[in-house]
Length: 303
Ligand code: A2P
Image (tube, rainbow, N blue to C red; front, side, top):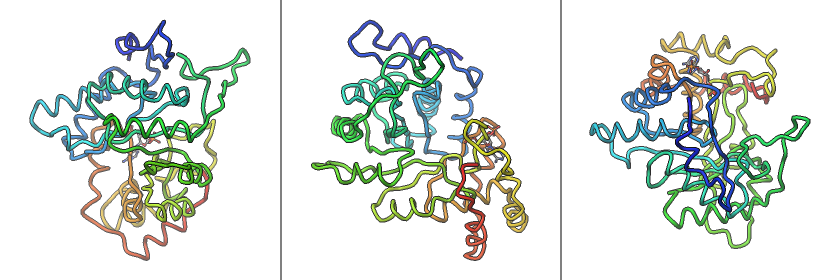
């Protein structure tokens, strides 16, 4: 899939160097468009996106088509966009969000989050690397970036602002910032039965920060950061046995577990059947004993 149209909208040659996407490595053109439309028809309203997913133009098109069909209104949709690592300098924050809005062809995002607490060197390269193939990191002042995020909310470009992949110390930096105007409303982190994040969840609860759990079915097991010798979550005997009782899949049990503990789930699927399956979790509930059994599966390990 090519994002060349959107790349033309970047500030090439201007004073501000924003990341520039020229090709998507992952999904065939149109896959995301169709998946988002199927999801909206199935009842999904929260769409988790990012500039670096290379498909925000298709997400925006799907939302606009569904609005045009009369199926939804813009205010029914909750779109989350993300500030990429190369865009932490405060002067880049608003132009980066404006670029996302231009790609989406929407007037605002419902939530805008700092995708990672660490930064890469600003510029057109999304993953800047040195001659040895090593990432070029960049110093970041998260409090200054946060103030620029606050300004985006004040300008009406983002209804709410939050963070992602922040640990307690990084959250505290923001929460304790002198003159803080808005607290992060959410922290998006990996969260599922093998990685339940009990301490972070408790800290966030105390500060009214919602945990949004990514990879709620376990990750797609990239061996560069996941211990692939640990078995896949969805093969877990406990999840499968509980699923059998309710005539549900292990995936549905894992999702139900998260929502029952107050964790927002954002299961990703490009498969129509699994998109629908992942939404069928509101017609059963897990007992306290089952919740405890699943909680005990925690390995404190990304998997
Ligand atoms: P697919 O898109 O083929 O459905 P991530 O870690 O990036 O969130 O990826 C989630 C992975 O889980 C994807 O590979 C997705 O594949 C797969 N998946 C999504 N829903 C289900 C489900 N209900 N059962 C099994 N696998 C699923």
